[in-house]
Length: 254
Image 1 (cartoon, rainbow, N blue to C red):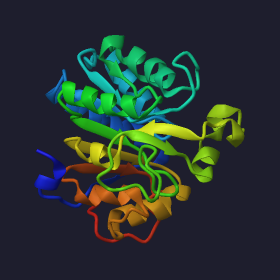
Image 2: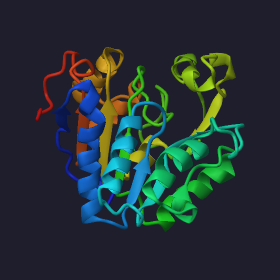
Image 3: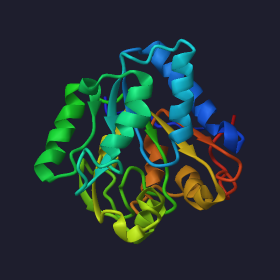
């Protein structure tokens, strides 16, 4: 059943000290894994979820069985080979799949090539039964995945052009050179992300506060793609006080 056919509820908001956000978010993901040890975990890339993935690896070392999971990535740069250490395939393999003991055959990352591959990736997601739990971050401009402002709220996997602000934000992965960041990426669409049965959004830092506040309590709009979390029936936001310092009022806290 798609989220459109379900009843949306306000996102659950969990506040944690910056150094503990990854651990708290990992607790949410670990609880899912215990319930569904062969479930499909959607994984975001970039800096926001790194502490979460490290915390999951520690839980695996302590006895959590993560080996039965299937991983589905949100996005990939266009023009980077899978062997490029800056590619998201390399990120997912080295920072998530290997530490969690998940075989390569159950790790799915967009190719970042063309429209035909975008349709094929949608088919791949369908073939594994859809995403059970999707981890997402939020960009300073409110993007989720690489769905930039202006993206249609029912959009599917496609190749998009990255904004200058997004390329600047990703420059640390490219020797701090925003001009080295690819200009395009293949991303799951907003509609694709909303098809996940549950979402966990991770955010830290005051730079994310305006976008997160608008996502939680502003209008649902293509101007701020993350605002669509208000339409999903099962969203948990884990954020530090700085990220939650914006003027939001409607979402419950824990």
